Image (cartoon, rainbow, N blue to C red; front, side):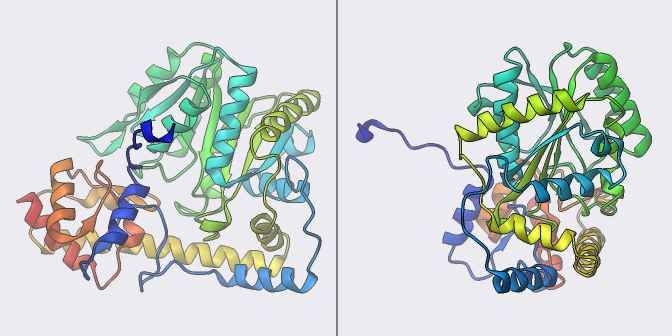
Length: 397
């Protein structure tokens, strides 16, 4: 039977990484996959993570199964991190939660939940969005449509078109938003715009779903949750998927969470049972180690302070490389004004490079960038940024 199976197309992002690894050219640079790298080009092990692992190894607890929804203590820590310890939704016990295998796992559980409980719902995705978003919902049997988000000529959020589109969405549909550090554009709503979006969603009767994969990488841990908190009004409903791949540098531990905020505690219990049902038929229960690390750090005052400092250092390095890239492009004589890159947030920059230019960067210069022109700014270093800018000049001119 397998002889008749056709090969699937390569993933648009991870497939580039595979091609990069097979490229024999010594000066190759990978600016495609969303992984943070330090100034030496290495993905670091955070010091707070190392200390937490030392403590966990010394305590050496059981390796028995976790509950279907994972560690309740970890889920509570995530809710407090996202909303703040004093938030009304926490006090009112309006939150159903699950520990998931990464943010992607959280999105898939959310998709399965939507398919099971709201079979007529469509999920609305920003145009553009993370390339894996449509795949996740398609695999769960949930239809998707898109709404306008990015004004390419102005390199800004097209808030007017976005609000108009939300106002026309059918009640009962789901509106997917990026909590911060929009992937791939790096363009986020301002706090007043978040309020406009939350008002429009409430008036339209759509369910917000926030993909919150980069908390701490835009402005700060608390500041980056402002949009999500704006949606979480008394009695309001919300889905949120968190990831700790980036801000804890726990990429291969696959640590995430799904939060479902219901209007009442009773409704939250019912939603929790449905979340558990879809998880049971998928991966049954989550792995423990990564969540134990996150929980250990968040619940220890000293480690928590250390973690926030390390996140700030990663954020500052990314923002510094944005500025360095803009300066290097100007120094190299690349035509055009790229100052908009300094206003973008998070690991990614929507460069405006065409698919042909991206292809030439790969073929002629061994520089790997996603076909949309999205650059992983965290892959730039002081030693390679001038070279990247010169290569961009060559393909642009």
